Figure (cartoon, rainbow, N blue to C red):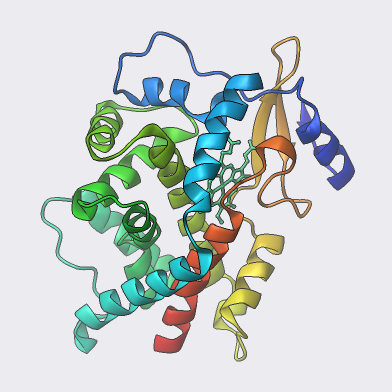
Length: 271
Ligand code: HEM
């Protein structure tokens, strides 16, 4: 079943009898399956409320305005590190061929500067630093790998290794924030950079472009719930609910917009 329509979707997402599909039990400690059984995102009832409160407490310590400044500075440094003539090329990355392939795909989809920034995990880097994580060079590739299958749960041994690495760097609430944030914020930027408004003669402000993108080409287009009988319900978020709704609404929407704005305005200035 698929639920569409603004009022219907809001009603369903406010109804506590519809819960996210639970991860299968019994996954070994430190694997992606285990992580999914520990986060707020897939929990329900009082366990969800308790875990969400821990996430919100961490997020309350992060100032969106400071995240925007940090995202802009990180993006500027990344762009400055590329000599002018090499701005069309992805950086050499012998240890991470998949990262290089992603960089090339992003560059084709979004233009050189945007692709270069997207391929370097700026959202994870900025959030990781703000959360006090020291080894950002270890953090960013681990977040990128683990985030790939975080929502679907279809992890491979590489994902499990990334989760194990993340657990050596920080705690579950922080990992929840990083994995929820990274893919969606990167996808918002990718859609904003690839859309016709980004290449028009008057692209306007970064904030305006992001708002338009959330309305017309949102990065998270649907979510899932199960009803009381266990049947899966697909919930359409395209009727202007890009951050969800109700007790599970994205708690990081201000942080997401701040990071995305800092990155996008820097790319737009450099074009
Ligand atoms: C453009 C970027 C983002 C979009 C579109 C987005 C969207 C969403 C949506 C739709 C949900 C709810 C899913 C559901 O109801 O099933 C959600 C949950 C969540 N988001 Fe975001 N998100 C973004 C970025 C972020 C960022 C930057 C953070 C943290 C800094 C974050 C943290 C979270 C967390 C922790 C949850 C789970 C909440 C819970 O379990 O109650 N998100 N997000």
